Length: 122
Image (cartoon, rainbow, N blue to C red; front, side):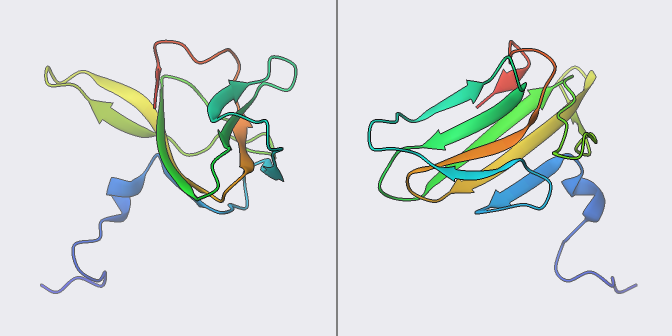
């Protein structure tokens, strides 16, 4: 039976993966950074917004995964989560951001309730 989807695309395999290529309608926004900025990940305890900073003069590519953590979009809704499974078969909620950031920009992704801890991987 032929699939309606091209190639081997499976929509269910993409749950929990948010691709931010220069922009995304649900993120908090993208802002310029100054010459003194450093590449890093930032979590603001006041706004609770998680930000990726690209202080390089060329685009950067970053993967970040949050386990067992809800990440809220700029409308206060949770980004859709997926599931990750360990070798032992244990499942955890997972949200992965794939970010392509332009040079000298800060990408404000989403709000999380507490600082990233052991459930954050970059």
